[in-house]
Image (tube, rainbow, N blue to C red; front, side, top):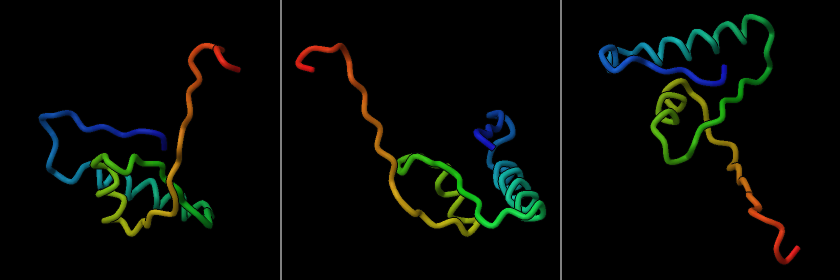
Length: 71
């Protein structure tokens, strides 16, 4: 699962937690040994994943090169 969103009018009802929880249960039922979900460390979805028992395992760093000067 890449992204999930809840319409504003339906937020704060546990829907995102239910959807992510179901996706995890299905992955495990299909035989997954490991379930990994990418999340920004400073964004709220990490709170949902924490409530489901996920633990942070690392941090991703991205680099961008603009132009080719000094290369």
